Length: 60
Image 1 (cartoon, helix red, strand yellow):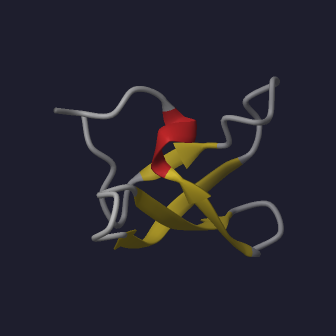
Image 2 (cartoon, one colour; image 1 turned 135 degrees about the horizontal axis):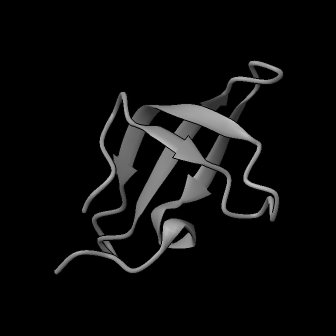
């Protein structure tokens, strides 16, 4: 299932699964169709950009 703005996600790089955040923006790269997600983390309210593929397989 594709990730959308407003979705809550768990940081895929945190093995304990304790870092959660909310997707505040989704950007598409027209050259490669790869999407990146701007995530606001709940624990420190920082905003970070991650590639969607880090969260698992992409939809067709």
